[in-house]
Image (cartoon, rainbow, N blue to C red; front, side):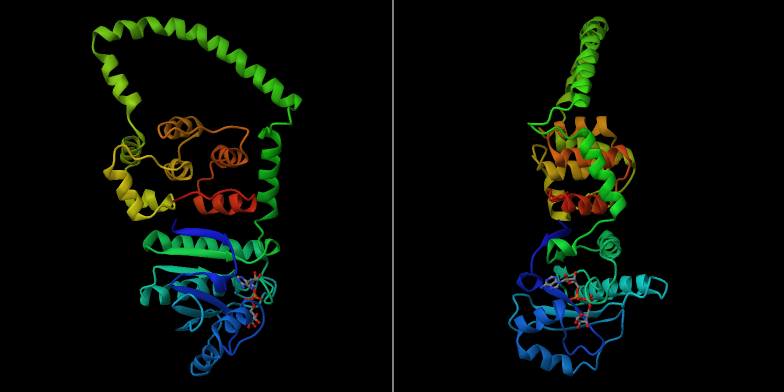
Length: 337
Ligand code: AR6
């Protein structure tokens, strides 16, 4: 998965580079900076002394010494002063310059803490948005696996409004085994009624379909119905007129996995990958159901994950990174592969 949000201590991440939220002196401090220096050992500070500091928004790279990664990229986030002193631009610059350095050093995987969101006071939901957007933008042009590492639950916040909207949607639509709200019973009754009327309509529809069997149209129909996930995906990408790479990147899927899917007509994706492509293709709810059914999956109101996906599709928000932020906030699996 090119962009992943994980809960961990960044010093434990076995990636090519971890990013440190440092200060302009680069001589260590508290927070994640303190953790990184403690885990790396005194040689890290010795190398940092040779760097001559670092400007806010900029980044410098060192070796990682006793850490399980190869490099530490030290960046200096802005101190939050209310949001009108260019904080956002400088935070964006931290992510961009760190990613550029990682690329220059041929890193294939990089882990970021939520820069500026601790001692420097940047509001956590906004800091997360900047991280997700800036990394997401970079990944549209580059192949790399990037982790946003969340240290503790309290450090992670999506915007209150989004959280409240999703929570309300879940409340309205999620049916757990024990709750059988009146609203849900009514909804199920309506569904049964509309099914009953569909049976009548089906009977009417059956006549022309039967006739078409002689004309050979049914074969075509069956081919369409039998088209597997891989074939359907490729057709749907063609329908958008976009490049394959644009779609798999929007799906938070890496190139290797996409070529596996493309080259194997019987490929069976995981549910999170299947839905990731539905999102990248901007399918509506009905199309999504049909599409993921080709990989053997369904959306149900007894799964919180499914209800959250439904919320985003219904509100036509197809930003996979924002969806993943929300899924993470609700402790669900993330989209992509
Ligand atoms: N792994 C991952 N994330 C962590 C860890 C960890 N081990 N420890 C803390 N965080 P902060 P800043 C999270 O304060 O706001 C230092 O003194 C933490 O929960 O480390 O950019 C520097 O020397 C928070 O979400 O960095 C500077 O003076 C995020 O890391 C100043 O703090 C960033 O919090 C920089 O402040």
